[in-house]
Structures are given as C-alpha cells and as structure tokens.
Length: 210
Image 1 (cartoon, rainbow, N blue to C red):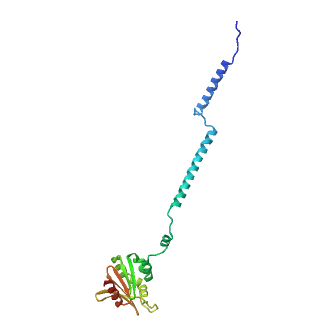
Image 2: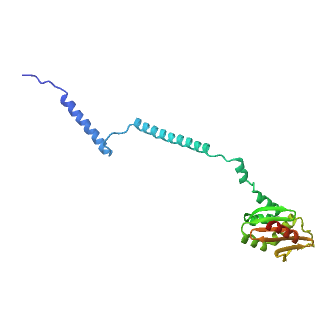
Image 3: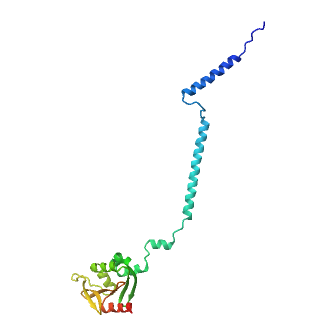
C-alpha cells in the first residue's frame, strides 16, 4: 500500500482563487473595476500639463515681441502733425481770426495777403456766407486788427456796426467803430476778400477777376 503524501498544491490553488476573489470584491465595492492610477502616473500627467502651458506662454511671448518689433515706427513728422503742427493755410487763418479758424476753418482754402488785405478761397459758399453774416460781432475786432485798423477799446467805445454797401456793382459789408473800419465781401462764390476800405476790396477784386 502506497502511503499518502501531503502536498500544498491544493491549498495553494485555493489560496490564489481566494485572493483573486477578494481583489474583485474590493474593486466592485469601490465602483471601479480596472487599473488604479499610481501616484507616479498622476505626477507624470501633471508635469506634462505644466510643460504644455509653459510652452504656450513662451510661444505667445515670442509672437508678441515679433509683432511690436516689426510694426512700422511712427516718424517724427507724423508725431508733429498729430500734436499740433497745422497746415500752412490754417496757420494763416489763425493769425487773422481765431473765431473764423474755429468755426469755418475747414471751409477755407488758400489765403493770400496783399497790401490791400486778404483774399480767401471759399470751399463751401453756403456755410461761410451764413457764418459771416450771423456772427459779425464775434470776429470784427480780429479782422480789423489783421488789416491794420484796430478798434480803440475804452469805456466810451462802441462795437462794430455793419451795413450793406455797393460800390462798382460789388456788394460789401462795412463795419465801423469810431475811426476803425473793417469790410468783407464775396467777389464770387469761391472768394472772400477782407480789407479796411472799399477801395481795398475793389483792388482785391480786380486782382482776382483780371
């Protein structure tokens, strides 16, 4: 009779089955049957994300620097224009009348000065004519000073009073205050003349129409 030999084969097999079942039960109870991420894997993912964000930031910085460096620089001439350098016509109109420059400066073109006064190119007849007629008291003193006939300002002085006058078929607006006289007239729809006398207006007209 062959004696019985005890082995652990059966016990080992049962133990393995028992351990597998235990792991399955634990995973099922946690609601996740599968691989459990290890701390090492999570750390690697975080490093990967941070690295990607850093790369995006570097690319954005380089792109911004490239944009500003390649943008056309503003020249000194442009800066001067934007900070108060005026066209020659505007500078001349400012010297004649601040009121006219502020109100109808955009409607005045070339300005010519002579011994008789000023000739101005009118770009919009309706706008300029309307302003001149309605606002004589605002610019009269400035024009009188510009043509060398300033009003004497004192407690007894009176403002300029304007009337219509016609000389040699030329309609004029004549303003007087004491010994000071200022006259303006539209030679045509394109030209405004300013002088201190009716003779000066006619001389300016003759130089324009000849």
